[in-house]
Amino acid sequence: MKKIKIFALFILVMILYSSGCAHVISRESRKFAATDIPFQWIAQNPERYKGILVIWGGEIIETLNVKEGTQLIVLQKPLGYSEMPKMENDSGGRFLVLYEGFLDPAIYGKGEIITVAGIVEGEKILPLHEIEYSYPYLMAQEIYFWRRDKLSQYYHY
Image (cartoon, rainbow, N blue to C red; front, side, top):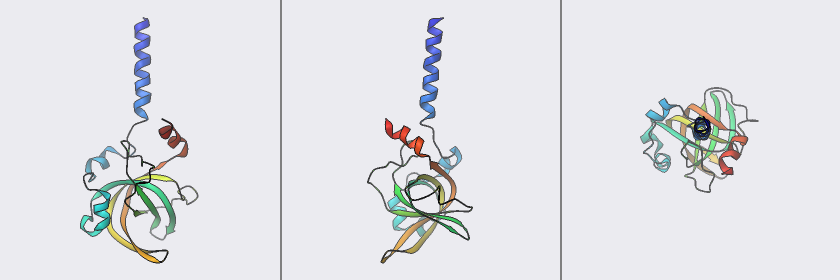
């Protein structure tokens, strides 16, 4: 009987542990996403990759509500196993996300972390201080917002 209890406890611990590593983007999006094309390639020539589904993540720089929905400017970060952006200094640059709906800038604000599954729409050139910056541009299919309490769980270990 004691062995059964120990085994049940072991199974419970494994389930709880594995749920912390679950993917945040749907299986369907992951199935169709182009995971073999580096962010930098698309950033250099977004028009060439127009129409493909990608999964990117990073830190929000700015959130703007526009007539088409909500536009996010994101500093790209490489993704880990569960599609969580790695918060290291490595980045391929910036990208734009259009979400067809309202995202509150008080929640989706500067410094927040997201993961996006979206279709490459091409590029948008916008002013960035005194220069013009070419952003790869995504139409969001899914956005996962990493809550700060969840981030501390991932980075604690």
